[in-house]
Each structure stands twice: as C-alpha cells, then as structure tokens.
Amino acid sequence: MRKAVVVSLLILSLYIEVILLHFPLFLILSIISLLFFREIFMLMVVFLLSLILDSLMVNLFGITAIFIFGVMLLASMRVREVDLRSRVAVFFFLILVSVFYSMMVGYSHNFLIYLLIFLGYGVFEYLYRDEKLIGKKIIPWV
Amino acid sequence: MRRTPVVVFLFFLLLSTIIVVTQSSTASSSLQSFFQRVFSFPRDFVVSLMPEQVSNSEIDSLRSENKALLSKKYDFEKLSSELESLRNQFRDSEDIASSLIPARVLGKIGDGRKPDVLIVDIPSGVAEGDTALLGNNLVGVVGMVGGSQARIITVNNPEFEAVVTTSDTGASGIVRGSGGSVALGEVAAQESLRRGDLVVTTGEAREDVLIPQDYVVGRISSVNDAPQAAFKTAEVESLIDFGNLSQVFLYTK
Image 1: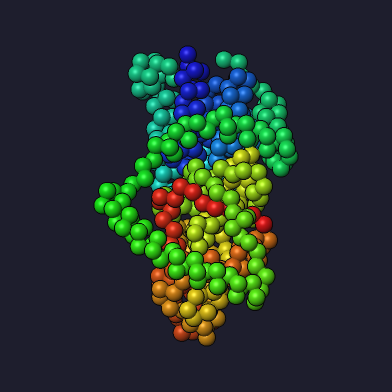
Image 2: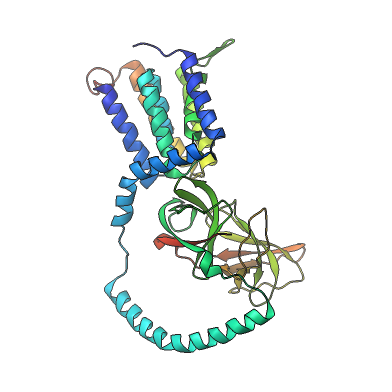
C-alpha cells in the first residue's frame, strides 16, 4: 500500500514537472522515496520513470537517473570520518543536486522556490525524526 | 526492510551512464520515441485543451482585416513575382519554403511569455542546429533532438546567439539571449543604433549554426550608448507572441 502511494506520487510529480512546473520535483521526490524504500523494486520504478521524464522533456537521455543514483550512492557511503549517510548530508546533497540539475536541464533559476521546498522538507524531517506529528497517528503510512 | 547494497546503486549509475553515452544511437532514439508516443497523452490532452484566447470582437476585427488583406494580396503577388525574377538575376537563392517543416509546440520552459526553451514534436530529418521560424521572425535554433521531439533554444535563451544587422542604420552586431530578453552587443561605437529599428539576421554562420538571412530577431526597445565604451549595446524585444505560440516552422539544412 505504502509503495503504491509512493509510486503514484512519483508518476504524478513526473507529469506535474512535464506539464505545469519546470522544477526538479521528480528528482527530489525520487531521492526521498529511495531513502525510505531502498528496494530493488523502487530502484527499477525510479529508473524507468526517470527515462520517461528525460524523453518527454527532451533532456539528455539518462541524465536524471545519473543524478538520482549518484546521490543515492553517495548517501550510502561512509567516507573516512564523515558519515554521508546522515540526513543532514542527504539534505545538503538534495539542495546541491537539484540546483545543479536545474542548470543542466534549463529549468528556472528562481532560488526562492528551492528555499521553500527545502524548508518544507526540513520541517518534515524534524517532525518525522521526533515523531511529533508524523509517524503513527496523523500520517500513519509514512 | 531489506537494505540495498551500494553495488546496486553503482549498477544503476553505470547503466544510466551507458544510456547517456549512447544517446545518439538508433536504439536510444527508438526507446525515446516509444516513451514519447506511449506516455505523452496527458500532455497532449492539456495542449489540446488550451483555448485560443481570441474574443469575439477580436475575431470580427480579424475578419475585416482579412478582407482588406485579400484585396491587397493580388497587388502583392504581382510585385513578388517581379521581385522574384529580379532576385534570381542578382543572386542564387535557396527555395527556403521547400525546406520548412511545421512543428507543434508541446511545452515551454522558463517564463511562459518569454520562454527559454520550446519542446516541439518533429518528423525525421530535423537535426541540431536547424532553425525555427515563424513568418519572417526567428524563433530560435534546434538545441537537442530526442526521439520524435526536439528542444528549441529560443532567442531569449542565454545559449542563443546570432550575427545580425539593423534594418535602417545597417549597424552589425551579435544578439544573445539574456533570460527573458535579447541583448544586442558588439556594435562598433561609430555605428548608429535607433530605438524601434528592426534587428535582422545576416545569414552568417556562428558555432556551426547557420541561420538564414533577413529573419527578424526583434525590435530595438532601448539603446545603451555610453560615450566612453568601445561597443554599443541595446535591448531587443522579439515580435513573437510566445505566450500563444502553438506552432513553428523548422528550416532544415
């Protein structure tokens, strides 16, 4: 059930990005989804959807997948004393990667949008970590 | 939940890299065409729903304008046949009309009224560096072709540049997109720039992109004429209504 909801959200974000909002929504949601569901099934779904996105946006075919799996690879590693698996590191990667990705594929460079999105993600992370709102009662499926 | 080992991410990363490297292969192009055919129906549906945004009064005025234009058409055709024979005497010209391919606009990236990129559907034969035109106006150049769709780098895009001249004063320079507008630069200080002048292409190739001659890039909206500067610059506004743009014509070489 949870995976079905996440896959539906990913498909929705793909079409929002293609039709309405030229912002790396799919990239961000894919990375966040893979952080929660590190499974082969999800990897394959994200890979396939990223290729569809590149086709519909006439991006360099496969570039979105490179960004997603590049971040996931980094987020799975521990380099010397720096734990790249921490959520702070992933959050930092997300900001960097989405801005760089937007530049690569020619999206808007309105940084206020990025700030708002990541502020939202930061609040989500804070609430999820401390189980203040999200977790068992208000959003039980997360 | 079972954790995915690093090697799996590495595998997908390598697979993606191989796909990017083989971008221009037939298999990659076929796969992109397949995805575009199968998954583009929501976008096609939205594009088909877009209203023409023309009111009744506008339609009436357009009808009367059309009648007036039809009466002028005869005179114009007579003049154009004379002009054509004169042109043939003085220089060899390509029949550009035979190389024009209509392309439907599927999406716009950037500001809706002055987008940086247009996504269009294309038949086979269109390649990077081809030119997008609308009437006698320059829309942009084809930036990337993937499957049955292409990206057009519009005149507003910072990646766009073309060698131009002004219609009245004959000043030559280079236009570059500057994110929502067009900047004319590299005009020698002794040359004259006037507000309202049309900026047209010279047909000179630049970075392997050959834009046909005498296509309008836009009209000069303001001139920056600093006395000490070696070059003059100006702001140019495209005459194309990008907000309502639904079709362009691609000039293939």
